[in-house]
Length: 356
Figure 1 (cartoon, rainbow, N blue to C red):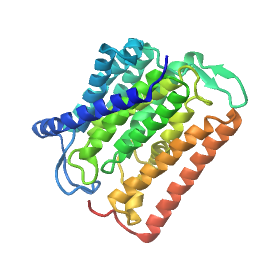
Figure 2 (cartoon, one colour; figure 1 turned 135 degrees about the vertical axis):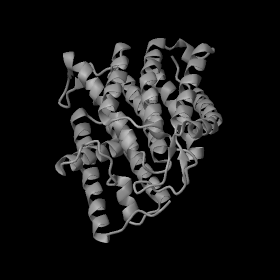
Figure 3 (cartoon, one colour; figure 1 turned 30 degrees about the vertical axis):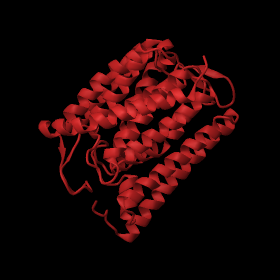
């Protein structure tokens, strides 16, 4: 099957347009439902801002995906099972996001729902059946396939959720990560990954029309959970045929910034004796703000980092396995060191995040 770039562009434009149309409706619904983010010590916005922007992106991605499946074109030839599995997995995640944005949900309950969504994906063929050995060959995961899949899905969802702290940041990070996955899929002529990645890129960029600083609407947990699930599912699709040099290499590198930030957050809270899911103001975007960067400058800085990681993913995927593995480890170590350096500089300066 020939992979055509204009078709991907058409899908992205369609998802972006639908997101533009649905986002104002989501804002009205948020106001009626009381899903409003109020200004506070952990927030930089000054005005009450509606949440639930994720509903617009979810409606655009799923709506355009199923419409494309029904119309003549390359998408009509795709196996419907992965799309059906993704759609069904979105149901509990979107319900969780709605509940959390309107009234709040305990961390434990969130993990249970996230794991349930991951289990739905496994029922439709998503998984990590093989792990690539950096020294050669592959190892079958066997009974570890399902636990590894659940762990990956939960980790990606929470990584996107945790980095959603600045206007436009999470939407831009997801768009960049999807672009990296789209490119890897194009190299390997994987239409399914290109199909979903194009929709996610379009929806994320369309949402940025309203979410770019200063944001008029937030995606909320509805959006961060949906985008996290979508990225996790997309990365599992990318690697279902062993197309990457190292299993999950491209998505891991594309998501390296939020993943490293998440790991540091959990370690930091555990060492201080706090609950690992207790919110704080120590994420990388908070640290950049304490250095004196404006919210917009901090967002662009992190977007640039994510873009560099995405480019690195494309380069490392072409290297021998051992070299690619060392490259991933080196990049992760550099990010860890860089994040800690930013934190030390912030503490030395004694600054506080500027108001939005």
